[in-house]
Length: 336
Image (cartoon, rainbow, N blue to C red):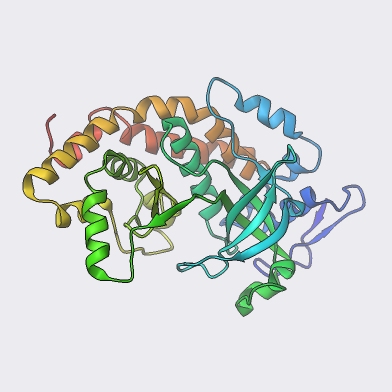
């Protein structure tokens, strides 16, 4: 159905033949064909998005007593550019846009694109689903969406390497009304940070990060809401040794290390104790999220079901081992 004869990895997508209509759903499948290492992640949504497997079937298979799989949305879901992000971080494609889900509901989201061969949509999706299962603070809505790069290029300048692609996968999540801890004055940042580490959300986030092996969490990538809660907004580098380490080196940053630097000895001991208590919920959350997580991974590997099964099994085994009730306590050498 897809012609690879003239394609080279990372340069072309292949043609879609007449027996599969040129729809946004098919373009997601074509995009994914050159998206990951190896190419088989690229088969991904061909069955899910070209009519062989309906959205209703996908959602029905997720409804096994746990949260739903986050949606994988076509290019038409990206409706309207709403501005660049105040802080784009390392990903210069980060922007705000109006995203429409498959129920027709509109969401004002932050969107960031993934270069071909990047695991970010998979890891961000898994991070959101696990947070959902834990009922932890998180953006209300999240999705993987096919981002129309030429359309985005009308509103913001893109680096040259993006210009060769008509579209690429992106992760989006609804905007969280809140403030960063970072401030113009260093003393104010230090004060905000010291106060934040007194809040139970920070220990829960730190425990979550150790569970999923998040390599890059710091006080710059979560927000404080007007209700006083703290919401993490970046789970890109989770599952680090499983997915990222072979091809990318990320310097470790963690809330646990920041807490050690900010808190006094007794306060840090209490922080670790709160982390250990929070970790007792991880095993149950994984059990609850497993059907949706498996469905999500299978959707991204649907062109190669065997590889999708293997990938899902590896991820669940990784999280299952680290989600054991005593795993974090043993890692910290902490007895509650």
